[in-house]
Amino acid sequence: MSYEAWIILIGSMAGITCGITGCFLILRKLSMLADAISHTVLLGIVLAFLISQSMNGIYMLIGAAVVGLLTVVFVQLLHSSGVQEDASIGVVFTFLFAIGVILITLYAGDVHLDVDHALMGEIAFVPWDTVQIGFLPELPKAFLMLSAVLLIVLVIIFLFYKELKITSFDPAMAAAIGIPVLFIHYLLMGMVSLTTVASFDSVGAILVVAMLIAPGASAYLLTDKMSVMLILSGVFGVAAAIIGYYAAMLFNVSISGSMAAVNGILFALVFFFSPTKGYLFKKFALKKVKYGSEQ
Amino acid sequence: MMNPVVVKGLTVAYQEKPVLKDINFEVPEGKLIGIIGPNGAGKSTLIKAILGLIPKAAGQIQIYNKPYRAKDRVVGYVPQRGSVDWDFPTNALDVVLMGRYGHVGWFKRPGKKDEAFALECLRKVGMADFADRQISQLSGGQQQRVFLARALAQEAKVYFMDEPFVGVDAATERAIIDLLNELKEQGKTVLVVHHDLQTVKEYFDHVLLLNVEAIASGPTESTFTMENLHQTYGGKLAFLEKGQMIAEQK
Ligand SMILES: Nc1ncnc2c1ncn2[C@@H]1O[C@H](COP(=O)(O)OP(=O)(O)OP(=O)(O)O)[C@@H](O)[C@H]1O
Ligand SMILES: [Mg+2]
Image (cartoon, rainbow over all chains, first blue to last red):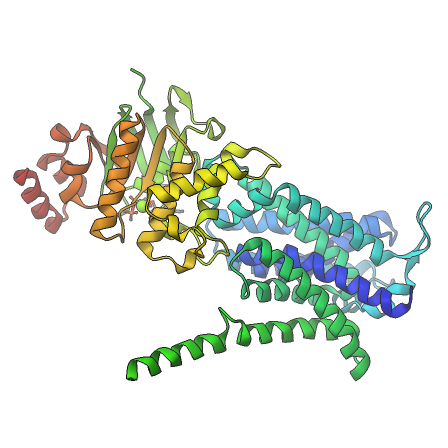
């Protein structure tokens, strides 16, 4: 496969995985948590490196997923003992992230694990970072990792669709009919952590946030059905990857940055032009009403 | 006869100070029961504690002689309307279908039968025409009816409803109370948090007067008295005078 095709494929897979996972964060008004997790996983990656003394993707994935979950657990603990939700997120986020940064500068300063790379990862190099596993041909690591996570995410959503839906909409009712709300919450957050980590390596932590939130936010403005929202968010994720790639070629800029920017632009377009919930449409409808009543 | 709800020595605290203190009451089967008390009396808290949504500091709760277990599916719940996000991307029928989730089981989706039943429940509350309507595009009263339909879809034996009459017009209130009476005739027990003292005697067979402690509980005739109201609402004078009028009127 050509270099170009790999970049677009990997970007699209990150887009789909992040997009559909992000939908649930948006529906639960937890967008900020995406921001937090995408930073605190840094600590998990550093710890995994320090403990295993290797750059093996699997250790990093586990380390990051564990710290991602811990972030959620800490936020939940603070919140349930009376701290406001956004404040809890802010405190846990900065604290764990700071520990990660300190550990990096103390112990891992001389390896490839630098903060810049972790935060601003660049998809441009991903196709060359390959491994060969079993009978498979030599494939980019990012592709394998994202395939695995995308599969996990799809299976979880398929199996727990109604539980994810009702715990997002009405957690009290869900608990009253015996659905383990907290379990589903942590399942979702585990999903978010995995998604973040897998995408992290190819596009960088900060850009993961764009991929997690923008596609879902766009999709939310276009539909009244959760299932459609999930599908649309995947479509937006892929569209941003493809358009972002060619835009980067055209303007000769960072591919990851370009993909993230296109996510933002797509959202802006939807925000203004959505036929039902768009800004312009609402203005227009208002005008029509005014005009109508003047007659 | 077995009482469907028995609460013994229930104490609940969010912080140090208990919001419910040593609550004891029982409700008989097949009756409409009003839960009455001022704002902050702990009415919603009582329901949530019974459903196991918040932990209790002390006491016992029995539903049909057993500790409440959600999977027994004997309890239906209508939360206060403000407790959910009505902008959630879903329609009325879908919300009612959620009432079936407890019956469906893990890894399965509600099927055609569940859907038909959900539609039937919507019809019962006069909302069949709105099945496909996005829930944010429903009026407050219509949203309340959707919640009610969802509770019907649960096919429970005991229902807890938190302020189902808030923000609905007189016609809707009438329709809801007719529906509750229908449930009662089917032998179901319905506990309703209610604020309008004027209609208590008309609507409910039993009442529970609540203000942190259980002030009184029993048949409306003998329990909904001026003296008990006085104790429940304490120094709130305006209320008292109104209560006096009502108590004497009936
Ligand atoms: N999550 C919470 N954390 C701390 N305190 C709470 C919480 N929820 C309720 N309370 C307090 O518990 C008390 C009882 O609240 P509850 O909601 O049960 O009252 P209520 O009788 O339902 O009132 P209303 O008529 O206004 O609905 C109030 O003093 C309230 O401030
Ligand atoms: Mg209440």
